[in-house]
Image (cartoon, rainbow, N blue to C red):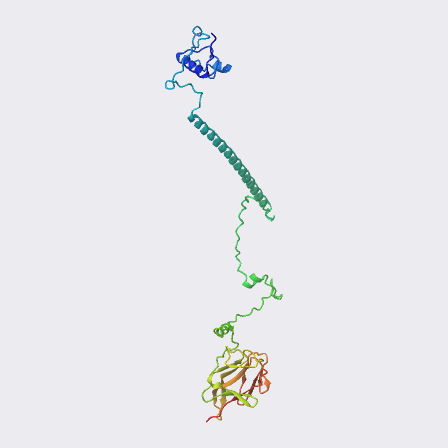
Amino acid sequence: MPERELSPYSARVALTQQLQQGQVPAYHENRGHSGRPKSPAAARRGRWDTKKPSPDHVKPNDVSVQPAPSARHRDASPEPYRKPREASRERKKDRSRDRHRERHRERSGERSRRDASRERRRSRDRDRRRRDRSEHRRSPSASPPSKRRRRHAASPSPSPAPHRRSAKPLPEQEVSFRGADNSALPPTKYGGAPANLEKPNFKPTGLLAKAANKVEGTKISLKYHEPAEARKPPSSQPWRITVFKGDDVVDTIELATKSCWLFGRSVEVVDYPLEHPSSSGQHAVIQFRYSQKTVEDEYGVKKVRGKVKPYIIDLESSNGTELNDERIETSRYFELRDKDILKFAGSEREYIVQLPPKD
């Protein structure tokens, strides 16, 4: 009866039992786990013959078929070779260590190359400085060597020699600033006779007075401020102005109440407004001033007498001021007397100055 071919499972079970008993069947001597013939190298290694039986005990067809054991008593079949997990971890560590060493070797090589190039540059700079010093010692009048512009690092240049102070007296300040002391030549920017400098002027500029004359709440700056000799007229001199338009009396101004009267069209700052459009914003001023006069009597005794008198001044108006039908000069005081007639710009009104008689 021909032999029945075993299933892969039954053949594996039979092979396992024979291996446990120390027998290796001839059918599987040169075959692997799956029944395929083993390679010659594997056959030579003899991975499956842990205990080689003698040739007398081996029979060519000694393969007994036994029923398959139940699942409870089934033995563990030999599994293919697996590398342990620890070995793979060690291999990974070794690989990373090798990479780290290679990287460190590359960095150290690059650093050594950089150090070598830096040393070469330093040596070149050192040789150049020595060569420059030797040339400078040979020819002291020669010009200093030109500095080569380097992109990365400039070689340190030798420090210049300290300046020696002369034992001679210092020159004059004017000569130091203006050049050679040659007084025979006319004064110039670079020498010659010293120019006649203007002496310092500590007089008031008028800026503070101008700022003080500004009226609060407006941007108007007063053109006029009272002088030091300004005085209010005494009660014994009741000066006044009578305003006429033709034959009619328009207004009366009591001048004795104030020391200064400003006439003009700027209602915000003037004391008496002028309505005619030809008049300026700050046209003219009537100022009472205290003036002194030396008088000699019949016995030859000199006495100083003072008196408060009214004056008129035009504040550089556009159309001017007339006193007794004559236009007066601007920015200059003119004394007013009794019965004088004033006219401002092109107005037809006449302002007659009056000093009433004593009672």
